[in-house]
Image 1 (cartoon, rainbow, N blue to C red):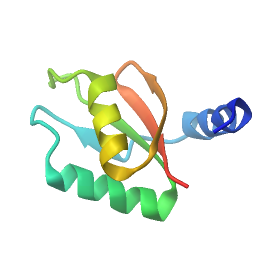
Image 2 (cartoon, rainbow, N blue to C red):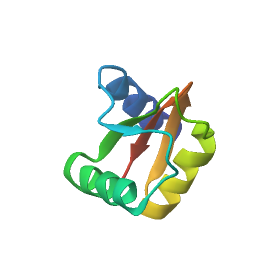
Image 3 (cartoon, rainbow, N blue to C red):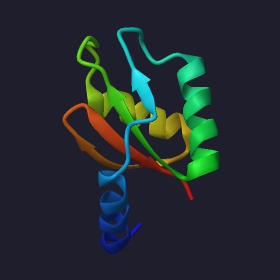
Length: 85
């Protein structure tokens, strides 16, 4: 994916609210399934790792991107954008 497309997706993601929250539990199959469902429907999904979680945001999001065959566009703090063509 080229830089121009990444910038466009980041701009779209700024106005979005997170639709998937990751809590204390590790990433479960249900979380992965829900993310895959949302990616199939919306293509761009914003997710948030809640402060109560001890999980590393970048690691969790990289795992989810690999599990759903999507691209990790951006992480900022505890929030991330994932995109699937």
